[in-house]
Amino acid sequence: MVGLVAGPLIASYAGWQVSSTTANAQLRAGVVEQQASFCDARARADVPDASNLGWSARRDLAQQWALMPGSATADPAVVSACTDKLST
Image (cartoon, rainbow, N blue to C red; front, side, top):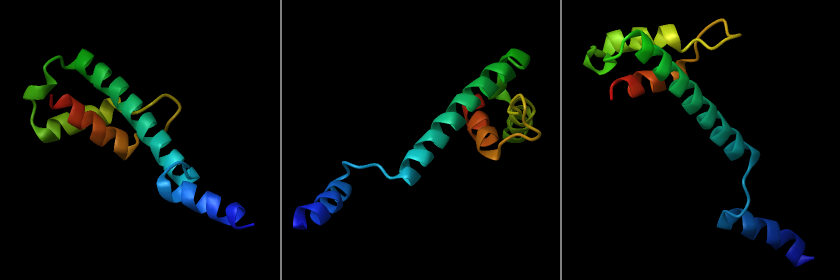
């Protein structure tokens, strides 16, 4: 009986289990990174040397290209990640 209770607690504490919250956060981070890569590629096709732009100009460019098909507005996390990618 003790093993039935202690087993999951020990496994969770040791990091052998992944909670749904952690899995969702990792999934969200992966989606944002992928969409930011698309945004970066599309923005660089429009402005090849975006790294020479100021921060606000890069942000405006990212805002324009971060809009994904089927979305009414651009995700702020994607815009921020795209802006960071355009600075390099």
